[in-house]
Length: 195
Image 1 (cartoon, helix red, strand yellow):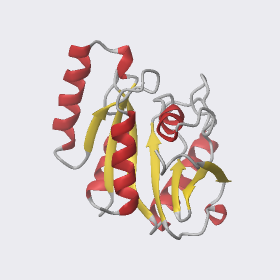
Image 2 (tube, rainbow, N blue to C red):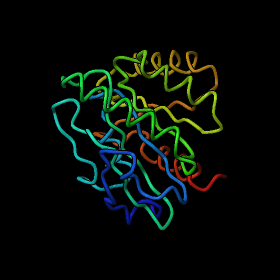
Image 3 (cartoon, rainbow, N blue to C red):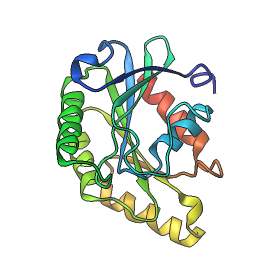
C-alpha cells in the first residue's frame, strides 16, 4: 500500500482557478451522491477520515485534491443526482465539473462509484460516454456490495459489464468488509503510473 500510505489532503477548490497546478498525474472519483465515494477513497488509501463522509447525500461540494506522492493525486469530485441543494448550487457544480474535465491534462483516469443496489444511472452513463471518447481509463466500483447477497451482487456485476461494452473495468467493492479494496488499489496504481 506504499502508493497510498502517505495520502494527505492538499486543497479544495470552489472555482477552476483554485485547482492545483495541472502537473503530474491524477485519478478522479465521481459518482452519484450517497454512492459511497468518500468511503471508497478512505478504504483505498487506508485513511479513515481522509475524505469526509456523511449520512447526508451531497456532502462533497468542492473539488478536493489529495496528494499520494510527489506528482500523484486523487481527486474527489462533487456528487451528483441526488443531493437536495438549491438549483444555483447544482448548476455551479455542473460548471465546476465541466471545467475540471475539460482542463486537466494530468487526469489519467476516472473511478466511477456506483451503488451496487441501484446500478448505473443516466448521470453515470454520461460519464461512461465521456470516458469512451477520451484516452482516459475508467474503473467502476460497485460499492455497498456487502448489502447484496452473493447472487444479486454477481448479477449486478454481469449487468454492469454488459452495459459498459468493454469501455470500463468493473468490480464489486465494499468499504465495510474490505471486498475489492486491494484490487482497486492495484488498478489505480497502474493508472497513475500509466503501465
